[in-house]
Length: 229
Picture 1 (tube, rainbow, N blue to C red):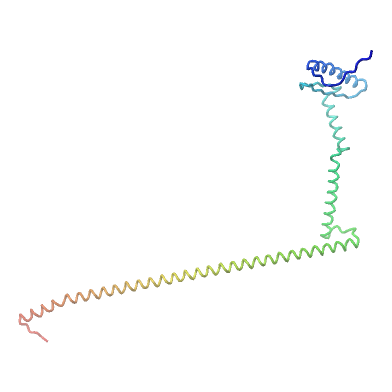
Picture 2 (picture 1 turned 135 degrees about the vertical axis):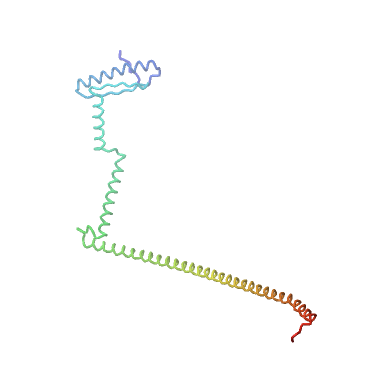
């Protein structure tokens, strides 16, 4: 009677799944060991269980086999790059060629690296240089005119500021002159008042002295003193 083929699918029962895992793990480790012995092959086998437990088998040191695998994978990637990187490498090569061409054209415009150019190439290069020189001169003229306009505007602003300062200075001078004249006027008024006060004082003194003279005359008459005319 033929043995019924087991359908490969996940075992729902946790206990049965764990038992099956243990049996098949031992079986695959045995097959790996037999393969390494019979065929003189380096075999490394790593298994993580559903619970995260690590099981491993290696025909020699696991570290050496993994280092050999990493080196082989790195060399394989260098020889056969992934398809996703091939367009990027193609674009990089195209960009590098464009940069090289533009750099050579720039040197030729500076008069360098002219070897190997034909007469037509030299004439074309001459036209490019003349055209570029014309644009440079045009731009230079625009910049010069712009600088001149800027200087003229600055000169007008400075002249206006100078006129404003001159007017302020004249106003200050007029103010000082007016203040000086007002001071002279006040001094003259004070001096006139002083003179008037002195005259008034003298007149008052003279008025007070006249009665004394009259009394002196009366006394002379009473004493029969000779009165000289």
